[in-house]
Length: 132
Image (cartoon, rainbow, N blue to C red; front, side):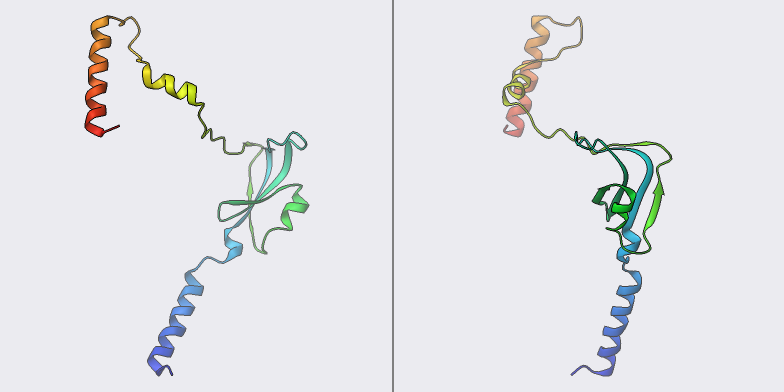
């Protein structure tokens, strides 16, 4: 059994946790009044976006999107600005990536053989130092 002090500590900890922890509704946000681009050819635009803790919950009509949010959500007016999905190109074509490993980019007008040899030597030293 808990002693009185332990019980009070547990209760106090729970109260502090509930008080300081962000409720779900505070983390819910509705983005509206913007030009929302979805990148979906079947439905390229939307009226609203629902977010929870930075994660997209729903995209679509405002009425449908609001259904996914907890009561007390924040509304962020985009003021007619464009909202785009994060465009992150994390892929590489192996052939083109290989070209970058065997190519040297020298300043324009500096294409002497001596300068190219110096670049190759510097690269080789760096590679040896880092064991690439």
